[in-house]
Length: 132
Image 1: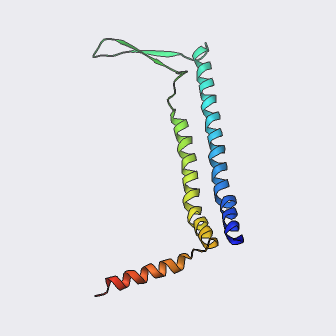
Image 2: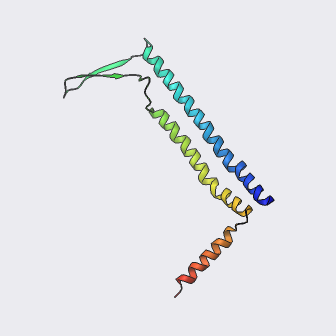
Image 3: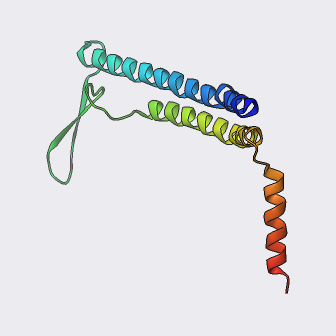
């Protein structure tokens, strides 16, 4: 019973807690970046020094199109935000992939499941079934 509790505690401290901290911290970082970009784009829309829009004429329709330099209030992710989000997700996924097998094996061993015995038994059983 003590080994099972120890295995679960080690799993929580070595795997679940770091993953939770990664997700929380990276979420806060992304939220802060997103909020700052919205504030900056809001200021750019009201500033006199920053060009606010450019106008172009669509040759096919003969209509003018106005393209804003900063679109405040939109929920679209910018290229920089997408790069940051992609990097954060990549780091979390790499951590999960690298550490999950070791920690799952550790928990299984502490709960009394022997991985090597199961693999040997399954391999031996498969070889016996494959033999003519």
